[in-house]
Amino acid sequence: MSLDERKREGQEPPGSPAAGSNSFERQLTSPANPSSSGGKEGSGSRHRGSDAASSPLRKSSAGGGARNLPPQPRSARDKARLAGGGGAGSGKDKGSSGAGSMAASSPRSRPPLSSPSSTASSPRSSLSLSSRSMRTVDDMLDAIDRGTSADREEGIMRLRSALKESSEARRRVIHRSDGVPILVDLVEDAAALVASGSEGAVRDSRMDAPAVLDCVVAVILQLTQSYDGALEVVDVGGVGVLVDLVDGKCRKKGGGRDSPKTAGKGDAEASKFSDSVRSNAAAALFAIATCDDDDKEDEDGRRRRSSRYRDKILRCGGIPPLLKLLKTEAARCRKDAALALFALSDDPDCADEIVREGGVSVLVDSLSDKRPGVEEKAMAVLANLVKSKEGQAALLEVEGTLVMLDVLESESERAQEEALFALYHLVTTGVVTPAFLLNDGALFPVAKMAAKKGSPPEALELHKILTAARKSVAT
Image (cartoon, rainbow, N blue to C red):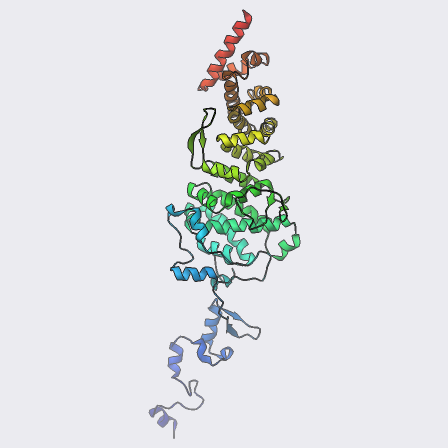
């Protein structure tokens, strides 16, 4: 039969590209079907080859072909999300933050930091950064939660930059049901690596653990700058974790985040914690301590502001680590430690604990540090502590009033005012006599402060008291 006769009867000539199948034109216009190649994908058409190269779920084999990855099992968390109809990015409403909602969430499973080849149990997290860009906050959190060590490091670095650039990114982290827990878990994991002191483990994990720890603590500090963020950190047990960072120690994971810190087996001295990690943790405790203020009257009739979050820091043993941080040489650590102690000292119970832990002596020693922020904040704490009888007795024991007189001539106006408030309270309560202040030369600096425009009323009152005492002595 001739070629023309074959065409008229609808038959393809031998050797045609589509012989034994559908028409050749249909193959050019229809999308490639990888499963129709009969297992010989490497010899398929160039359209199937380009599709395989562009798909993120395909990888090139050593022979130049392509193969489908085997299906991966879903984690318990993914199954729970599918059952509840929620996705990875499903957040919660503003008013739903609480410890109960955090405790109800299913435990997350992910590879340890020290496993370089481990992949997440979710199909989505099995993709590396080379094949999936982390463009949204949810992508970054998913990478931190379920990715490899390299993914988690890249994710937290990008998240820190995103929070600096956008307040909406911070709100997204806070209102995503597992956003803050993911970050607190990363703090514990990175701190454990740094505390172990095993440089080999850190290197094998393909993660710069000290840099990751510094970055994630800075992120948590950014979150605590908002009321909702501070509450979320508290609800997931972040107070105990922050206290451990300030203390320079890392407790064994799973030992109870908000329980008081006690040295024991499984705890490691984290001597390699950087100053920025410890100071940022102290600054985050300050932000938490200023939440939810209420007026409270103690046994001595003192009206002081109280907060259940200050009580949380107190129960977690946060005051001794802050006093320990105040003794360090770094100005930033001293300043942030004093700032946190200032917020805590506004609560009667916390103030009494500071005195019991020897805080008055530490604070008086800090008054000699003239670096910016240290002297004025330490003096502000002392001004709160001398409102109690225990604080007054501790101050007299270390001759702190003489140091306060020196602060009256400090270059910091804020430090001068705080010293003035403390001395005024000591004089008006009869703890210190006006004659004592006159003998130590307090009249001139007090008169100088009283003459300033906009000076506090305590300066005028103390000047009157000292002037009257001087006249009585002269007569």
